[in-house]
Picture 1: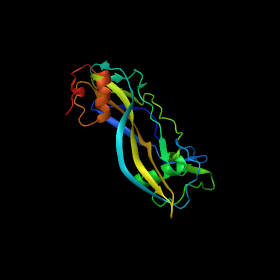
Picture 2: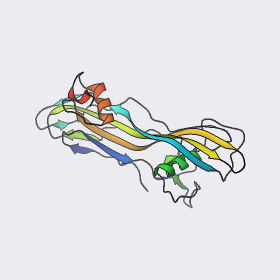
Picture 3: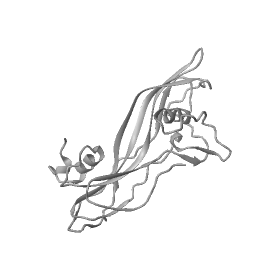
Picture 4: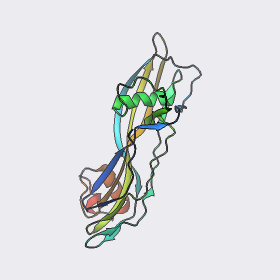
Length: 221
């Protein structure tokens, strides 16, 4: 079983992002309820085809800038939520459950073992977290507690979203098409407004919200 790791860390001043995989196993039944419902049920032996799959990092929380002197110190400003990610499945055609769609997407992107043949629960009632269309957004909290050097510090959090278009074809007749998205990674990090954040999309978005205009961390490469 894999899950989100939680905890507190003490880190240096180099811009850093810490990530934890979100998919894994959890107790409970299947998730149901694609956003678009059809009256006719899709067949049970159809084939999924995926296209346009893309991954993007989305900022979910950011703190105000804290100025720390030599030797650093504890980070006390709260990471406030700026975005709430939500899994979603939109579909047109014969009805598919959202869980089945996300199960297929999870296998397609490697978040669910490619050898997993069905969504069916095992003897302990276990199913995959990634298939839950009602999953709540990761909590924010202050998971990085202090730095060891001076700087103009901003904390941030984010998720890595994955989405794509699908086509579910039944033998003979019946096609369902749609779009699905969910997150795969929960991330937390810090940046120094006086330091270039490199190619980190999340760090630059956070800097744009909390650093002074024109700070090195806000400049695009």
